[in-house]
Image (tube, rainbow, N blue to C red; front, side):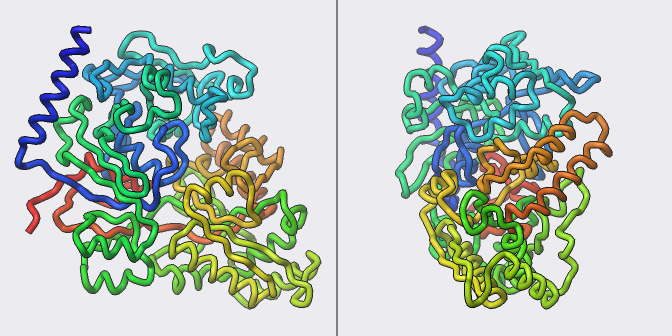
Amino acid sequence: MKNRKYALIGLLLSFLLLSLDSAATTLNRANSAEPETIDPHKSIGIPDGNIVRELFEGLVGEDSDGNIVPGVAKSWVISEDGLIYTFHLQDNAKWSNGDPLTANDFVYSMQRVLLPATAAPYTNFLFPIKNAEKISQRHVPLEKLGVQATAPHTLVITLEHPTPYFLSSLIHVTLFPVHEATIKKWGDGFTQPGRIISNGAYILRKWVVNGSMTLEKNPYYWNASTVKIDTVNYFPVTDGMAMVRMYQANQIDFTSTIPSNQIKALQQQLGNEVKINPFLANIFYSLNLEKSPLKDNVKLRQALNMAIDREAITNFIMGQQQKPLYALLPSTVKGATAITFPWATLNTPERNKIAQQLYQEAGFSKENPATLSILYNTTDEHKKLALAVSSMWKKVLGVNTALENQEWKVFLGSRRRGDFIIARNGWVADYNYPTTYLELFMCDNPQNYSRYCNKRYDELIQQASFSNNDLERQKFYDEAHQLLLADYPLIPLYEATEFHLIKPYVKGYTGKNPLQHTYSKNLWIEEKS
């Protein structure tokens, strides 16, 4: 009790000193939507992840350029056979209430991910760990998970097989620790201000739903001395133009996006305040293979793919330096061959002719058109894309397409339940390796919204995961990718770019992180002119 009392006094003194510091700085950032959750183990969307990465931290972190750096673990040793990872934690690692953060917290947290009650959407991130997949299938007890605390600050993780991307995967929020006592006390309500205990650079001070989230510097963060911004306010803004107006009115310093039709004008007006950078992410449509008319109709799915002019979309509709995409994997993914649809090199008239023939063979014509719907979450960009795609389908094939937009949380629920024919989708790589994309379409993956299931595809991914040879592993990935494209469970559209407006006094942004994770702890603010 005495230690807790001193910890509380220290926390109060820290806040008092912060309030008296005339140099205290505030950063106002836009988030693209209200987070669905900030529980690291249930987080799924980009708006969620933006907040979770501010509040929590895993064993490793990222620097501004995306390189893996120490996080809660100050160092690690990997055995020669690549199976055993020994992590040595920071000596001063603590939770935001002053409790010590120990290796046992990671054991508890990783076990929590696998509990059925947690319903974690990314349990597959633990599958490289010994017995994790068997535990998720209820074949092995939870205590057999290959994660052990051999000392208060020593964590040993044993893998099923060598996994070259395992260290990089630890930046994913699913593998972040959570505070056991808080969860046991509050259950799913532990994420509320006044309850949540986190371990990252910031703590949640205030949350007004659909209004703002206020984060304050965590004095107990192990690397708090390097954090230069004291307060971060996040505003959920789904309307791109509203975001620009808030930026111009100096209400926000850092936007989450820019409307495509405003980029050139804003570049002329604001110059280098417009930031456009490559992004290891793809935009695609998920095709629901459990609903007509797409179910059991691969020719229709191929026709829909071929009738889309991706070059027109990237050059004229989006116009933000995106690249047309004719595959699941973006071109910059490491460890895979540049595989595309076999018809990708045909010109537009040739593609359209084949698409029309396939459409007829699928049982449709302009006199007997297919009726489809596209579900997307409410933003100007997604609406423009859906309008463009539906117009192309109408012109080339005669398809009748209804557009349905939903608010972010409602959209996520509809897509998760399969309440759609075609749904907007996209995937930001969790790490730079083919599995971050290919595993999406495995039969049991909860993110497999197309409900695609091909046993041979799953076997190939599994064979790759057990291979110790890079060339052999790549061969399995390539065969799986080709098989997926031949089955047409998706419509790849383009490789994304990341674009922001950032005030000149906000420093530290490089845009070089291929995942475009921008941590407020790596930024600072110069004196505003």
